[in-house]
Image 1 (cartoon, rainbow, N blue to C red):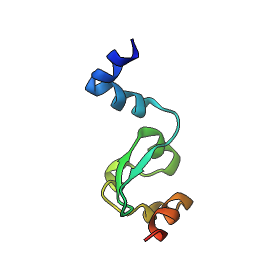
Image 2: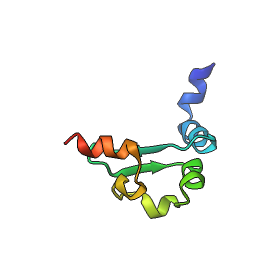
Image 3: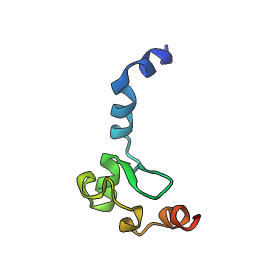
Length: 70
């Protein structure tokens, strides 16, 4: 049954957007690729403001680990 949900291309996106936890996805260079609605509410930044930018703009511990690993 759950396989049906994952076949729907919009299911995962809708689920991640509906999460109450903030989710930010960054690439190996620390560029923000995804920022869900909860992340916007937690940080005060709109996704349009941060997408494509270095995660250091958010001053998070997680970003420090990502960018220091180089």
